[in-house]
Amino acid sequence: MENKVSKNEALKCELALLFGEQEENIEIAAQSLKVLSHPARLRIMCALRDGEQTVQNLEYYTGIRQTTLSQHLSLLKSRGVLVSRREATYSFYRISNKKIIELFDLIKDVYCT
View 1 (spheres, rainbow, N blue to C red):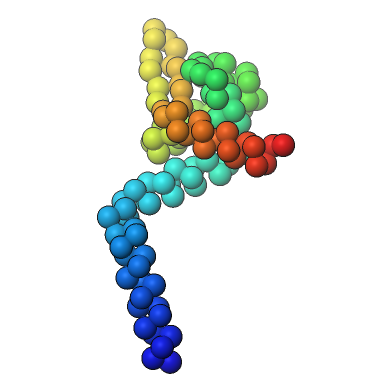
View 2 (cartoon, rainbow, N blue to C red):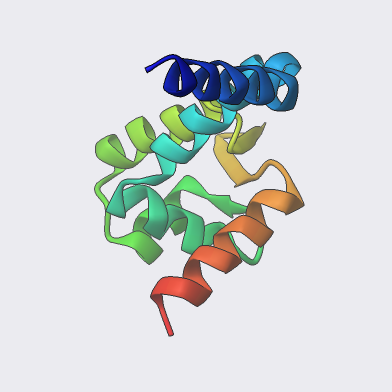
């Protein structure tokens, strides 16, 4: 029993060294990945893969009704996945970081081959 406890403690120390200062980043990453785990939001990401789009275009491309689409866009934006800008009466959305596009491409390669 003592050997098992010492192995668990060693593993705990090793993990603390590996992730100790990354706890906040791990939490942010987990929240961002959770927000992507919805079919409608994955459709939005597909539509934004090649660049910025208006809400009207996203509604057309995804087939998601505007009220529902706005809720999904707001959630993606609040998690840092998307950024937006306004121009006159139009809202434009784009993926916030090229690394997220790379991640999305990996997901697409695994599941959409």
